[in-house]
Image (tube, rainbow, N blue to C red):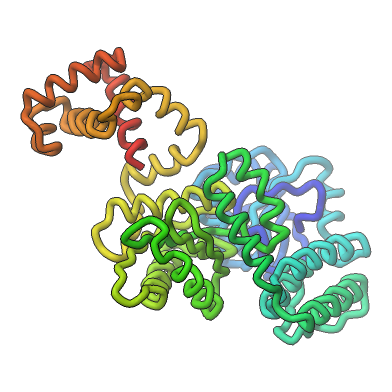
Length: 437
């Protein structure tokens, strides 16, 4: 559906279930009674009515009807609840402007499979097949997803004598030839690992610019990522051995796609799914992490693994990597998971942006220039966390309360801050916590 120019993706899966037809809906109560696989186009009046919780109800009904998509034709705000519901229901939430009749005709033409639509699908399928690394199962999955047809592991598909059928036969013949050539050699795999490393450590803007190259190499950067961060007793110690073992292990795992790289003195293993699998997916990721840790650990070596929550896209990948690092730093067990709730989660998402990091650095720069910057930050954070109590802060940082008081006065002078001012106090408290992340 996304090759219809007038449609914009708002939420839900980028690759929804196959569409069987298009329906114009004027009454939201009729959404649940539509046929399976329908693209439901709401009129302007119905789109305006689908606001707030009513949109969530409409998405829930669309999911129950197994609709392919819900299309809004009037301006509407999509909240987090609606976005999450669209993903869980497997219903693409789209928006469109312009003439309603032309829109319905265009969607119908795309579903029916006219020549131009078949050509666009074939182009997308070829990119997917060539980026699948020579793995037949991945090639079949990519081809079927792009073409909107069921493709078997043997590259079989329903025979149809129309434009889409001809495009399907061409793509599958190409897939057969690519599969006959065998899996790609290690050089592309190394290239994927290098690009993945760059995506994780490069500045935000540069990481976004790397996304097209990553897609060309077959990295599923647009999916939902859970990051497993594995560290040894010393940075980089034995990581080459661990990475080689991890590469072999993940090739045996079925389900999500896996990517392996080394960055920041750790092994980074990325578990990617096409859609958010919720808490069940996180539980499965933790189970996979336990199996991975057990199988890659060299004899007599202690390894630890941090597991993030799931985030989507290139920037989501970076957030997940940050969460996995935080899970390791805060956890005390061999397998540490990131806490789903609390302030740390909000800080992770905020601090993953370059702008937030720059703001924190500028605010704390006078302290960061000092020789014992880490200790000063710990004292300031403890003092602020304990509502300005030198005694309680002293207990946490294991110093005399008079020493804490002297350092707080020094910090106030360095920052030229008034710690009795609520706004300044809150800004510094958030900055101290973010700096620890």
